[in-house]
Image 1: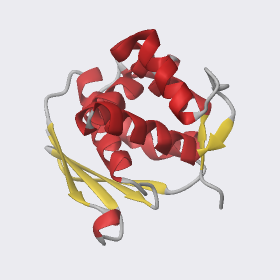
Image 2: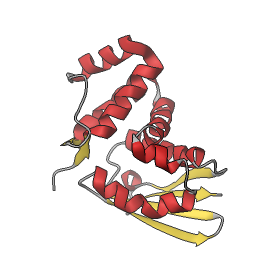
Image 3: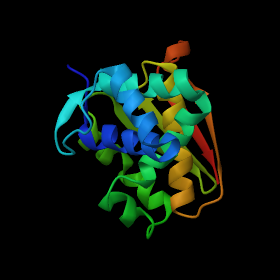
Length: 172
């Protein structure tokens, strides 16, 4: 199966780059990657473009900005981001596997609630580069911030390091 990602994700990362490093930073990124300015939100594009955006941020600015970009993306994906602000974190997490499958054509996400203070997210066949792992940690942290939930996110397993899946443990 071809790995594809909706344009809204690419656009959110481009908006993050512009907000963080200005028009010059955005133009440099687009030039370095050979990209046009924007993507159509509802269309799917090769996930390689998404990965290249993450690599560019890491290479040019540092891996910590990939995590910050993940937070920005979850908080700036249009109407979904707006609606999330009025829900609690467990409601959002419960819907996350379905939302994921609407944005990406590959992989899958499973959620587990071992108890009231913990949430576990497992990403199967999702993270192929280090920057993607870092970005998903940022997405999880951004979801906590949006719902005004105090918590800590830790990556506890990594497919790239030999585990069956990537796992993020959230302690509330």
